[in-house]
Image (cartoon, rainbow, N blue to C red; front, side):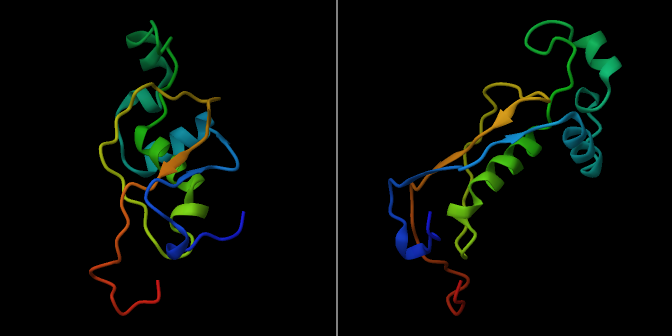
Length: 124
């Protein structure tokens, strides 16, 4: 797909990632520890086996929700912010847990379009 610029997008347009991203335990543990998140459900397998043995966790480490959001945003960056406009995120809901081995794909819908109020003199 050709580069997408601000003038190319319209309210109602939908964009889907051209690739997926499989999340690993290492991704999850590094992200969790780098962000100082001390919820053991993201990095302590003994803890999850003991306290979350049943469905849907089955004793598995749960992927940090903020990592999930970061990957999803990254998957559609070629359409949403690569060329100077910004994706807004509102009303995020975690509907299902993500686990290592899950592959994420993303889509974005343009629900509003406006020029920047703070960067009026910028080319971006």
